[in-house]
Image 1 (tube, rainbow, N blue to C red):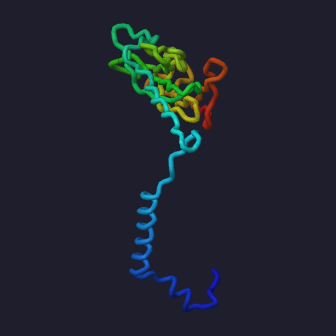
Image 2: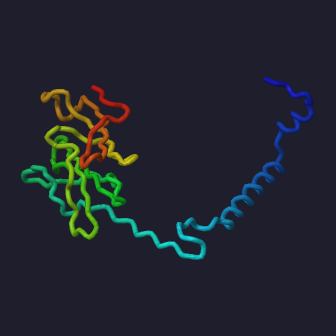
Image 3: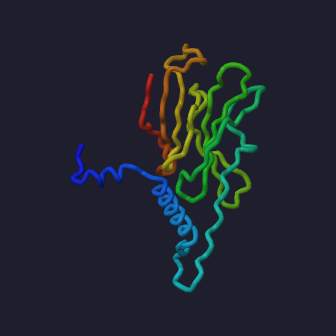
Length: 193
């Protein structure tokens, strides 16, 4: 620890008084008040004096309502467990990624992960990719879109005789749209058994 050459000065600055807190609070309040009043002009690409065109409204992500997912659920219905949305192919239109499984009364039904898109002016969403097939016997624990990639945590089984209650394999895949299809890679964290 370095000792001050002027101990009285160090001691005076080490003890705060209510006036110090009042002065600090007043200064912070002043900065906040000024920042809310003094805003910069909106950035535009138009020359000075001309109005920039208004941006087009953001496209709504495709809905899963009424989509026939490729699941064989027999007498029960398919259930959309969760969805995430984001622009996966760089066309400024969001895609929807859905986790879907059969509505089983018992056990843990395997999940399917599907990508839906909807072109401008299209009446219905279109299923464009199956990222996880329910035949793989996996369950999706986490699902997100980050940095233009679909990322998930999948729980699976190392052998067919492992009970469905107790998955013993964890994977962290990531799917990236490249050259007209989704390519699967591993996220950080890779695979564990």
